Image (cartoon, rainbow over all chains, first blue to last red; front, side, top):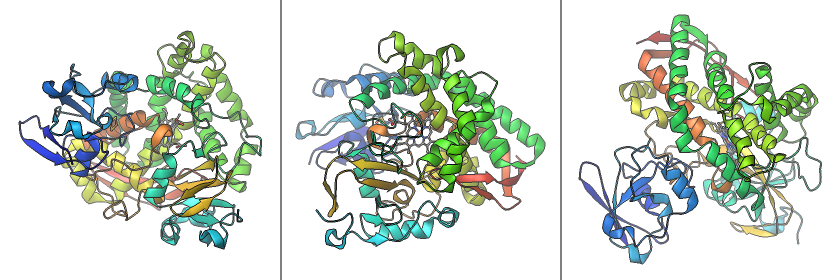
Length: 107
Length: 402
Ligand code: HEM
Ligand code: FES
């Protein structure tokens, strides 16, 4: 199964094994990772699963949908060009090794 | 096919009325009975299927093509009975119609908009707490759980000052009307005319102050997103679902924090837990207890065969305490990872006002925890009975300032 890495604002990192068809958010919450709140449970309604995608991976992710784009305008930490909602990133085998940086706050 | 829920389909029949006063007084033993009887049950009293385990409630919520909302999310089947009011364009709609109206309300209540109202909501919470500290002893429902949302939400919507006393009674009718034709529902509808008249009037464009949520909905007409006839009905959704729900949500949080002083102390020592404390109260008490769906086709759900046109009652509150999904489900723990609870629903109809509710809950609990050392219950709490909403009518408390 693909594994992905979350890097906390203090530089500490967590490598997380994903299970089939999971989103990055689901993998993070299943492992009890701090830094992803996911208040809406992955329904693309809360913007509390915000991550910054490592630049080298950015182009390999599917494009941002309109509803995700609108929600990203409301993230608690600053929206950057590499901002995404982790509940909208489904982990496929091609994303094995993906690196996601966590913002300093989600609300 | 066999009769609904007959022995052949293996679905257990239960002689339980989840809309009865005795049930409302203490629903938990019955929730357990419903969960343990099987993944799908049949309630003879109202001739409906029921799901009370987390997995099945979540599955039904996330399959709107099979379990639809357009035939009503209460017991009444809109295909067989005339709805008591014109149906909601969002709650009681299916895609593609729902997709369009939902996009409008999502935009009006987005995280970006919450950033703009946050300071105002927080200042009002501080003011309310100031007033309560003066009083020391008060009713945590009337003076706080109701007074606080009433001090911000109608203004945020852009409502006129006159007639706001209709808002809570109107919402109470709406949520009673999802239930079966029992006394609660019949009496509520019989007395609803003045409240309905008020609400219909307030939903008109000229009665909504510029800049408010109501005016923002009407502005979507100019964008071509909705028609001028649809806008008032979408404003009505916020009037129906936006006030009494948060009254019961904040009431639930206060009742929990007053009953579990260790959690109150934990919150006081770390104010960043306020949002989680509110969210956990929504899981623990589930202010919105139930909703129905109607099957659009014959379907098999966890081994149970359900015919077309059947009502399925989802016990959100029972799912939120299903031991299959939650550790120590009956304890109120403000540090719990609540993500995935169904107190706000799940899937395409998941509460579009959830950010408003969380913001109100967070800023109120933060203001309270910063200034108050202790909350003591000083009299018997009284329950308020409603077919869908769970909450208190009064909660006498005395607070000790920090
Ligand atoms: C603690 C407070 C609240 C709770 C527990 C709550 C609960 C719910 C639930 C369970 C649903 C799902 C209905 C379904 O699946 O059929 C829902 C939908 C909805 N809620 Fe809330 N709600 C709350 C606050 C609010 C607020 C503050 C607003 C408005 C500002 C609001 C507006 C709505 C609307 C319009 C829908 C229909 C959404 C749709 O069908 O797409 N709610 N709510
Ligand atoms: S979990 Fe809510 S938007 Fe991703």
